[in-house]
Length: 461
Ligand SMILES: Nc1ncnc2c1ncn2[C@@H]1O[C@H](COP(=O)(O)OP(=O)(O)O)[C@@H](O)[C@H]1O
Ligand SMILES: [Mg+2]
Image (cartoon, rainbow, N blue to C red; front, top):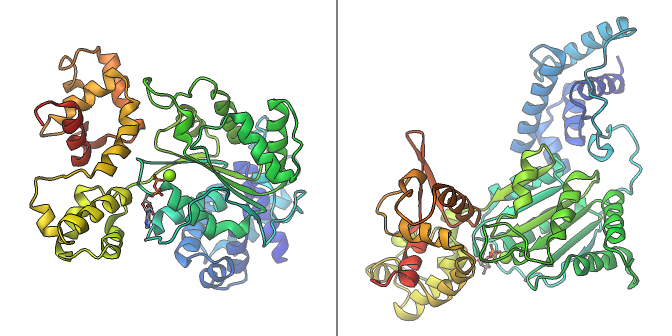
């Protein structure tokens, strides 16, 4: 049986059961395997990705085919199983129930296109149009291998349309997104980075984006037409757009994730990016989780959240670049400052200036010492807290051990509902640590935040 015929059959079977066609990577794996070749090295080289990544994709493919064909499929038996299934399928094709596809579902052609079809949108060029606007220049980038490959996988393999890259200020969102751009830019026709740090209106942001796409100063008047033009571009071209500092669109003195007055229409724009069919990806960087992101990511849309955490051992490179000494104590310093690159940069400068670069001498001080720059960073999210959130933070700062939400009830003058909502909101600002112990979720503040609350809000410090 012809290779192309078997491939087409596999694709049709997968589509009929799942509503999705095989993507390019799955097709390549299948093609190589059907020809009895070892696929991992070649495909990894062709696509400039790791062999491990290809193997994971292959394992996933065998799983899908096993479900679709009703028997255990592996690389060793896939050809035999597909040929047999095709033979029986052909003989019983008349009257066969192909109805497992839900025809009421609007299947996005960009995501579900057969690999054998010719796409009707412009092919991705090797030289994308890149406009990074006011993006900071990245001089050093220490290891973020795992977040980078997860994000790349979401964008390239899963065709995720909207990604929220979240995490406390200074953790490295801007740096990571710019490094991601550098890594995957050749897959796109347009690569755009914009900071929303000065809180531009949606109208201003759309106009700015349209000018990049059309290279003309004339843009449509109405916001609806602007959105519709942007969506046309996102359909026609494969675009990667990073909107940084999205927290600047969100308000203060209210629970996390709510838009400031005059900025609510961003919510609709982001929702449309998630829901409307197109071939592009929008990344939103924020130190506060916008409300609709939580909802959309649960609703089976191609929307994901990535919460960026500690830089881990790689943070030692930061200490090394600041020429600190006592390397054996660096892990302790990194733990105290949560592997937050910005917090560590502030602290390393302080250690260099006042302690001659000696980390162990610095660690003899009562920990943690909060550099003035670090405190000023924290004043931004703290300045947005509601009275109930602040009361929860102050209560938690005084606790030696993590607490369950119910243990905060009656300890501060707010109702249980207000406390529950406040805890969730603080978590959406990435100011809360949660652990699960004996099936109970316990909350606490990390040492830096505890110290900040004590310094700023408790008179006994
Ligand atoms: N992976 C990394 N390697 C080296 N430096 C980093 C890394 N991530 C962040 N930094 C540094 O930490 C600081 C804060 O990073 P940034 O990306 O601006 O954080 P965020 O956008 O989350 O506030 C910057 O000075 C940046 O250079
Ligand atoms: Mg940033």
